Length: 447
Image (cartoon, rainbow, N blue to C red; front, side, top):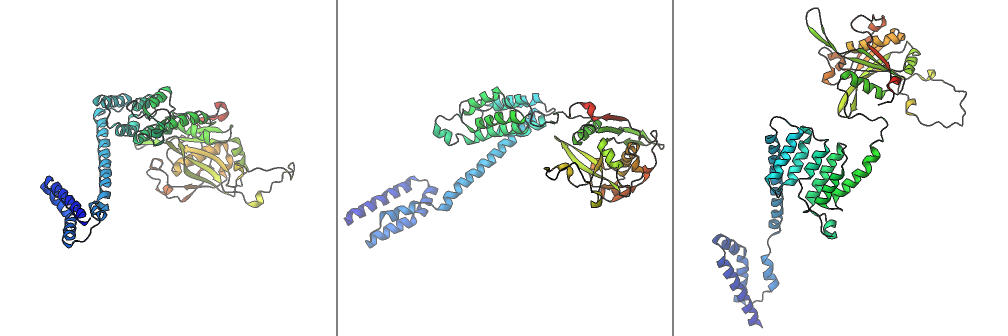
């Protein structure tokens, strides 16, 4: 029994020695270095006559854990570097084709160049990611036909799962994730897919996949929320600053009878010294209820001009200013309504919050004290009580385009007191006349 075991060990040593001879010199040296302890163990066991279990001999063939863990990490890093290089290459493709102009035609030309370069569409995922990133530069981020053409870059009937196991384990995850990313960008820009989009998704990924589920969710929720806003913002905002200010003030006001007044149009004036001075536009809004509240205001208590406050209209940010007062003291709030019963239900109303009344609002392209003083002087024509009420300017640090050259004091956020508007302004002086006055009721439907 002992002799048969020794013959078995000699056969294993002979096989190892033959394998070492077939290896190249560097590999043989490495194998000899790795298995040196094994040869010594076998020789000692044969000379000493001690038994050596076979499981202890086979244990030395396992490599170290550090060596096995380093291989996948190296492969992942190489894959990330390859993906980054491919993205850079596709970005260069967009820059090479569209050197002069970046339009829809040049964007489609880049897609055609890529699809005709390789029939197998290698690197299509990286190309689609690069194209999605470049779409705003070419102005096609809201074009459905471009999204369908970009979706057509995927190879057809390759990523479709063949059974429920492939469907359950997310067949081709990188491609499905790329398709979902394309649909999410369409969703963020408010683009609803059409029948062509569905046909392409079925040909590329199949019926019950993540991109198709994303498509079904978009088609379910978009029609429900498309007309949910009773006052939608138009897709194309007015380019004229006066029209944009009138539209913005109309949306903020909470009274259909509020009147929009253009106190000054933007123009260029020449001074006595021959220098050109650009006058900003001044557009204000005030409702009859605000005029009535201002007429009842205590002249001993000042009013404040505050701003600028931002207002976002889609991707355009405008700034407005308000004429307001501090909340009335408690002794002036005593208002008994004898027609109301103690059992009446009083619901919470945002308009009844004690934040102080707002008497008027305005928008201007230059938010310095002199420009806002012209607005107060224009308000004084329809609100004579402003000649008796002190006005304080509390102007914060606004954007640079709203700050003039000499309004460093206004940008510091300090208070200014103005009594220049106490005298009646002549409609023919300094361009402070009311240019336009229109009621909001004449606009028909609130936009």
